[in-house]
Image (tube, rainbow, N blue to C red; front, side):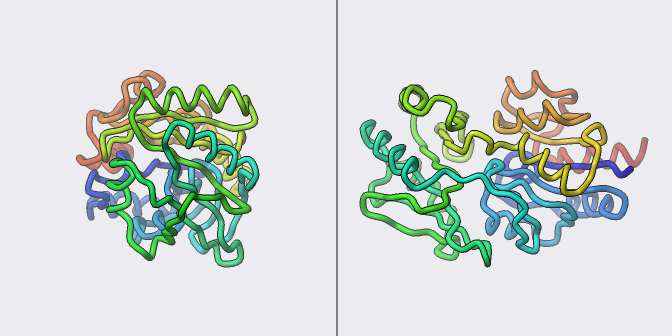
Amino acid sequence: MKNIYITDLDHTFLRNDLSISDYTKTIWNSFSNDSVLSVATARTYKKTAQFLKGIEVNAPMILLDGALIATMDKKIIDTKFIGRDISDMIIDEGWKFGIYPFVLALADSKNLSEAFLHDKVLNKYQREVLTRYTSDDNLKECSRIRAMDENFKIVYMGEEELLRELAEHLENIFADDLKYILAPEAYVGCYFLTILHKDADKSHGIKSVSEYSGFDLEKLTVFGDNFNDVGMFELAGISVAMANAQEGVKELAKIVLPHTNDEDGVAKYLKDLKNA
């Protein structure tokens, strides 16, 4: 049975400038004939496809923190949505703390078209994040933002203390009906709070891909750096943390690499396997 390699993108497979080196492309692609290769990311399908040009992916991708499972050719395998009514309630509760979220939603399932909604009212961290996106990333500016019918996730960005208070507030209201991920955001130096369907996470995504592709989790190696990768670590036969990973994530990994994402850590690990 083939080995399976699934990697996170940001701060793991991607360099900090969001590029992938030719070295990493060459090593990763050299595994494509004999291995199952995919990614697990908080990113949308569209952004992921942009980053992975020239990269071999031969299994469904875990996207939007597990809220969407889809192939590179846009075949949707599974979705986990937050409905419009609950999403709007979350938005209203967040505004009591003086903050609006980003809302990532499905606009058109036939063409796997996503929508990235944001309000006109933005904090400095949100403004910085949006500089990394362009109009072709399905951005939609709203006045007093409202959700769509099928929402993948709701994301708040801000200071840790504020978002921790908001997370506790939302948990008191919605309890286990939703999933809450609070983690550092390394690109702009703040925290993000991601709110998802209760079964939307990378671990559920791994199970969906496993069932679809028919692979053994004991043959699975995963790579990550942040707390939304922990679910993958718990399922995989081998879990690998980058040198730049969060300390709490390193503690849960079977292997901690000596190399960072900027040093082609994933590729160097794979190259060592070939040389073993």
